[in-house]
Length: 111
Image (cartoon, rainbow, N blue to C red; front, side, top):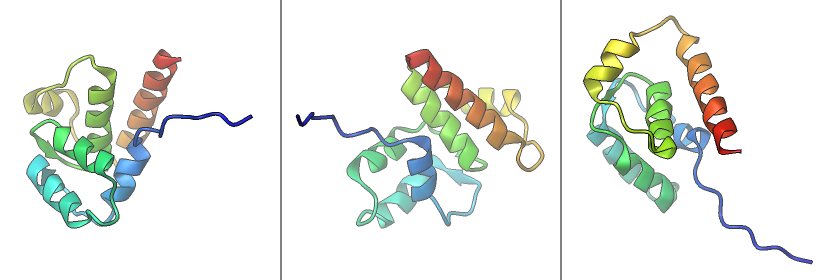
């Protein structure tokens, strides 16, 4: 018996892969412009996600993933000032672990 599954929504990993090669920091507009140049290899859903990101400067791909988590959770999107005050730049690797933890908890809340 065949079952029909809806297409999966783009993940943080998909978003990070589509932004490979970009040099941070970047504004939301810079990210939109970059993803638009890759339109032949990036799906419409991913391009829409980038366009829906909050207006702020992103220091690295981890901050983009956190913003995606904020959008998906529906709990509200922080302002650029809140991000700056709550998440000072950390040592290499520290933010990645924090993002993975946040995404894991976000996924477990949905289950």
